[in-house]
Image 1 (cartoon, rainbow, N blue to C red):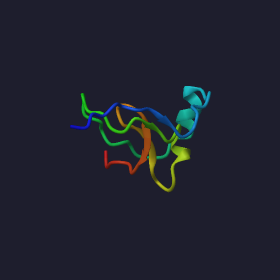
Image 2: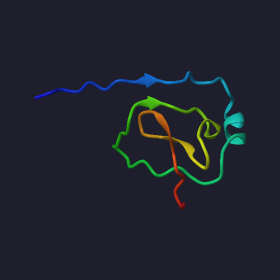
Image 3: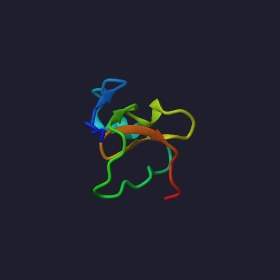
Image 4: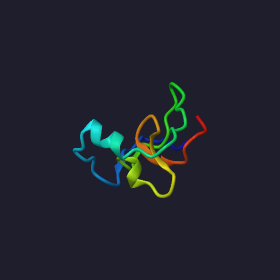
Length: 73
């Protein structure tokens, strides 16, 4: 039986932007809810919404951050 070890991959370093700067870069809409106790991929593929194409937002996976389409609220 194969065993898996969680790996944290970094595609881009975290920036040193202040929380106010992050909010100023936010696109409209909200990220999909991450259910308590669930973990998605441990990837750091974005730091702010502006790192994402189109209307996608930089959302937590419970372990990292990836670009995802915003939910309807």
